[in-house]
Image 1 (cartoon, protein in one colour):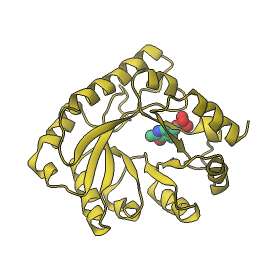
Image 2 (cartoon, rainbow, N blue to C red):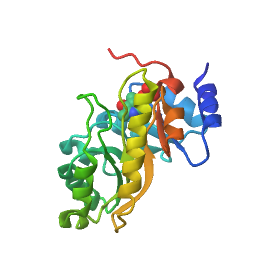
Image 3 (cartoon, protein in one colour):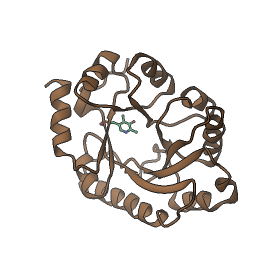
Image 4 (tube, rainbow, N blue to C red):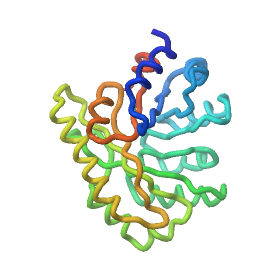
Length: 222
Ligand SMILES: *Cc1c(COP(=O)(O)O)cnc(C)c1O
């Protein structure tokens, strides 16, 4: 099936309140343009340099989401244009994003990544760490970032019950942290669900799904 057909199939299954991030990592701009011409405007990449290059090549009304692990020293390259950073997993990174956002007179929206998987390989903080950061005085001084939600990646497993448990855990954490409302912390986004589990994620309360291979086909890493 074509990228356009894949997109239309997925979109027809999404409730209106759920945003589709088309994860285009490793894919050529021609594939992204196919999705763009089918109406897709939100794209997710996991490497900053690749996102910068594609931002340069693509129409300027695309919304770029950084969904990968972010190294502090590379934030400056995406600071002029990135719309949402999903994988913020420490306070030092928030401070760096704030610093770079000031240079471009912007406020950059961020999601805190919560570790919900049992696998060691996945990044993220605990709900307690997130809550501690949000309540700190140094956090309230960051005027050029806004934490608008949480992101999580479930364990890579066939066990649907386990995945469901992890998604529910993220949703519960979201409902708890949502009680804290400040100038730079207003939660409205739960980013969870990928090609294999986005329908389950939506049932568990996801408002943003990150779908790659079901749109663009399998990735090949050389
Ligand atoms: C690659 C990636 C996705 C998309 O994965 P698919 O299984 O291809 O849909 C979603 N989220 C993150 C963080 C990713 O790195």
